[in-house]
Length: 155
Image 1 (tube, one colour):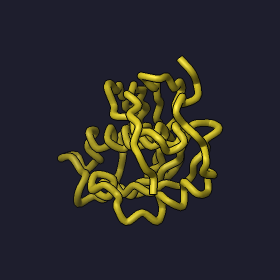
Image 2: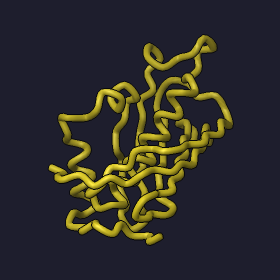
Image 3: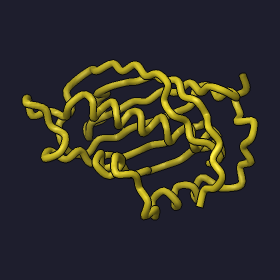
């Protein structure tokens, strides 16, 4: 497996990709629900940093903590966007498998996510994600595999 997407032609800078995400009017509803906001992109490292605004009225469990499934969705979002960035914005990468470990409860408010592609191959990508609270404490960590699928345009 190659560490670089076979079909990717990196023609956009990190700043251009970041600006595209930040000004998009077509953000998926799941991303909006999670309070997703892309903060930084690094194609060289195949990584992204994401901010989430975890709203109490949408995401809490009976213990008044962010429900673990939403934390998984946040980690999945970080890792999936890292795949898009790693591909030079030529591929999406649906998740095939994901394992999540939880280290502490997450409270509503600002959360920070990191997503990275560890290995990119022609048919599979290996990913990692971390989620932190506003004090910088690790809340959850995930590893995953995804299947790269080419898409035609990135507007």
